[in-house]
Image (tube, rainbow, N blue to C red; front, side, top):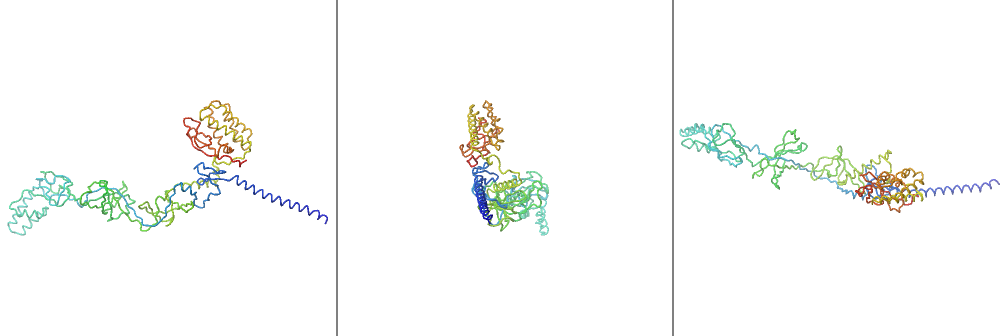
Length: 561
């Protein structure tokens, strides 16, 4: 019992001590975790998720304000989430998908031609001579019954004598045979009646036009022999004309005979002719891969002249009820078509489409992929698609370990510096900026260069192990032995990258401002440092404004120490 009374207090003491240690450890880990979370708060760009930075700032790629990584919506599946402000800046417009009739107007170019059915050649069935030519000018208007020429023919004279003799004989059958002979030679009945009543044969016969139209061809002259079965004149009736147009073979299947069409003419602005399709060529022209389509156009006033250039318009009704999507919303990759749907709250989702025919008004028929009422992106979808591919590529590369989480000095995690090292870093930057300003104004500042070399050497001598690799080459790069200004400029070309890497890891204090800018000149392939964004290129004084912001380094706030 004496042992029990002695051991009990000791045991209780150790139990209490262990409990206190456990509670203290728990509180310590919670505070440490909170402190770590606060000090290592990671910010990213909503447009470029590969950018990572401790603390707020701007994206080195698009110059947008960074946001906390935890606040960036995580994309799930094929959907893509973009900050609403970014969506507005991208100029995204959406349209609601609806159903309706789909129509299309096929356009084709062509030329006016004479209608072959309205052409008439004047030829003789007997030989003779053109005694006098009345139809002497091509293009002249001719009416039915007008005298074309006076014909002398020995056979006609004989036939007239036979007709007159038959009349005088009183033989009806003989008279009928004589009249029929002249009628078969294309003399009009009224002229035969006139010749029958005469006492003697007429030496020349006035040859009349059987049709009205325009004299389009003349193959005889006055006094020339008129051979039998030879085309002497061509008269064309232009009250109707043909319009022959060429259609691409993929559109020819939509055209049908007797379709109502319209035609417009470059020579007759504002005038529209209406007609109908009367012919579709049965074969495709192998040279042009087109099909000839012919329309018949009324032309009572003969405004449409053969050879006139025209454009044929053929309205087609493709579908009475179809799901219609603006054509600008469809992204064609070659082997597939897709569109981006707007789901609201900055969310967008790609949809693979099966499209049909395209119609007027920039609308296209969609057979599968979307439905009526969906909201589709019609402007800015190329930027959304590019952003989707960028994010997908970033995720794949990071997942395979091929892409480092931090893209470079502009977003690198800074080192934790002691107060002494922080002062030495600030001294280096102060001396560097002074040298840069002197070079910009072409001043020979020997004291400033010595201060830079001394500050670099001091940082090198006292650098901790994690910083030593970044500064071990700097003393040689900015040696105090470099005396002339031109050599100092050349020296700072390779040294600029060393300084940028140094300050990306060992951040200067906020006494220099909120940020330090890494500038780049593509002409001399050099980097340098500034405390503002205005380009001050000191490498070549003839182009001090040549350069751009390569990255931005948020300066140290003291949380890293």
